[in-house]
Length: 121
Image 1 (spheres, one colour):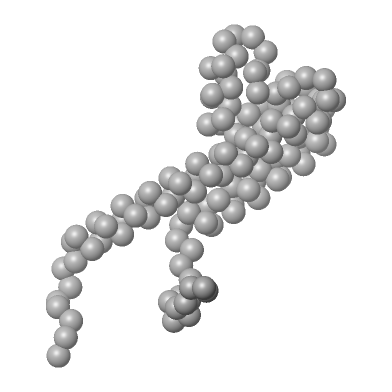
Image 2: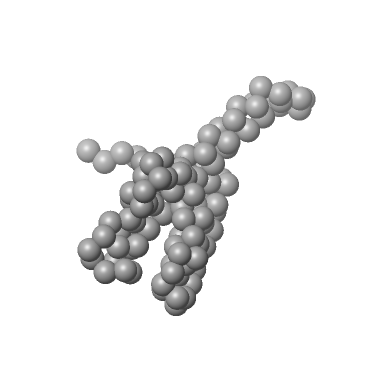
């Protein structure tokens, strides 16, 4: 049975969705920049900065050796793509969750401190 949809409610994106879309656009730019630069350690640094939360986990897992989350044996760009695509997805999800949490905090704070006069006749 289909659920009834209320079409009178406007679509609210909040701040989480535009932040995630902006991050994804920046991540795509960073990937194209990475592909077009020399394949050295400085190019890797750009990818690591864009995916900082996942990179921190990778550095902890590495324990001082080579970066644990970038595989080897598939070619330079493929190895980095295998790391980068899921890392961008995880970082975007984390950014969206944080944005939703902030939206909820502001929404609940706004309803608790409503100083407007009561509505009604």
